[in-house]
Image 1 (cartoon, rainbow, N blue to C red):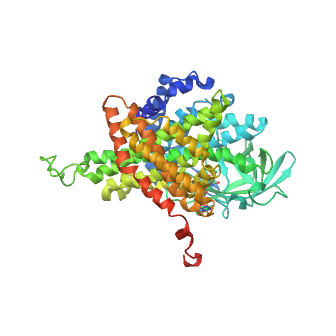
Image 2: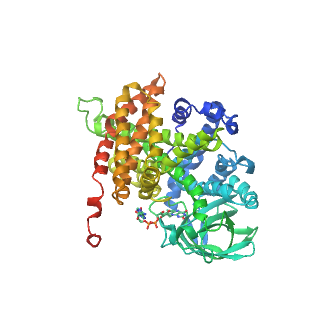
Image 3: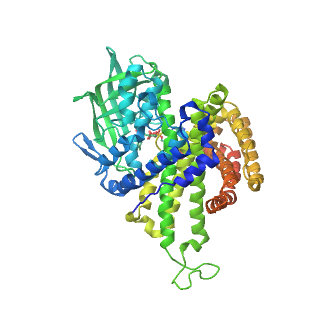
Length: 576
Ligand SMILES: Cc1cc2nc3c(=O)[nH]c(=O)nc-3n(C[C@H](O)[C@H](O)[C@H](O)COP(=O)(O)OP(=O)(O)OC[C@H]3O[C@@H](n4cnc5c(N)ncnc54)[C@H](O)[C@@H]3O)c2cc1C
């Protein structure tokens, strides 16, 4: 049984002890009414919803899957009531625009809520999370008319959102899309086929609002000729628009989430933003979803850890190397074995580091939007831009690693469906692929975020890390790690000017190296502010495990990066 308990104590530690959320909120007019007590109530309520309503459906819905029957798409048993609790509680509109009925809570707080919803039932939350992204995109780019028609319904979850980009021949390279948009009075007629559309159709909402990328007549080829349209399922009550679900995919994981092929046949759509600037508008949604998907990796890692941790308390096998610790029993706990401890502590270190990073980026997003001075807003936006691909890729790669480690802790029992560990491995895998594959995130990080400005944004982040080194006991190791990041980045900037393939060849290693150093910085700061009690003592221990056993990976990554691109690119294409 995949039980889930929201890690509220740890979330509060990150918010208030590590990142001093109350001071942040006091300085921003939009959040001045929120304090620790209110945040605690919100975290507790979301925790109850995730543990009592969402988690109990996780395994049964996976076994049942979503249904497609003659164009009608249905979510699995129980999702209807659970989704209603999610929407009627206002949980989809928590961080949205208060002018349109949302609650406008700080992202630094709602990041924790997202973690709970992803962790307790990713497939169910997939029916909701694209709604939030669609609303943010409409809010940023659409006309007032479109905003007032769609936003209130989306924030209450009466209507849900979907993102329709991908076509069978166009995934990463969206410049290749062929779906067309023909002007028709004030609207446009959309024709084409999109694939892999998460929550593109289902029976949980009155209306489903697609944000569709399509080409206007005579639009320039490639990514500069793509426009964005709102294309609802119902044009008014009972009047269907011209699109339908052609089928749903049979997937490795998140099987309870309906992933549709959508056929648009002169469907009526309304332009969002400027003609031919659709991809830029869509990035508002994609950047939101990228952070959220990173948090999906984190939430599922937490679920996997909790499941494995319960198992370690029951399973006895073999004896401790230092002599029997359970002499009256036939064997000792598997936790006497250093390798089992390695697996469990690796999960703890990456999960708690990931929680710190996602909340830190949430705080930067809040400041980028609400800080009173322009300089803080700009500096915060630079942090968000630099770290968004890292949260997406590093947290989902770690999420996958942690889920596999948790499964391994179960031994053969981890391979058996009832124990739930294998479902998490299947479910988390998609987070490394959608919203831009992790390889593409790494390229974005290395080429666009680090190399394009000659390492300036990265340099600012390094300065930020040096301005608060955290626990003095860890500062030598942290200093060495930051120096190494700085030196490899300087090497990359220099060497990339003579090698066009270098950014691509080094990108995944570079993102991994940055992720480990950023985690080390946050771990050192967590260790410094850990309270003088059992919780704090454990925090300090996991910090030291991270520094001893995980941070040293950066030295191997450094060596890999400096070996360059030659033996990646030399191998002939026809020999693969
Ligand atoms: C379950 C599921 C749900 C999805 N939900 C949605 C959705 O709601 N809306 C939507 O529009 N799409 C959705 N997608 C599509 C998803 O975003 C794409 O599958 C993904 O972006 C990759 O595109 P692709 O599958 O065409 O792979 P490709 O682009 O063909 O990539 C193949 C491989 O080449 C690599 N590659 C490609 N280009 C580059 C490059 N320039 N540099 C380095 N490596 C590169 C990729 O990393 C990958 O390893 C979903 C997909 C799945 C499976």
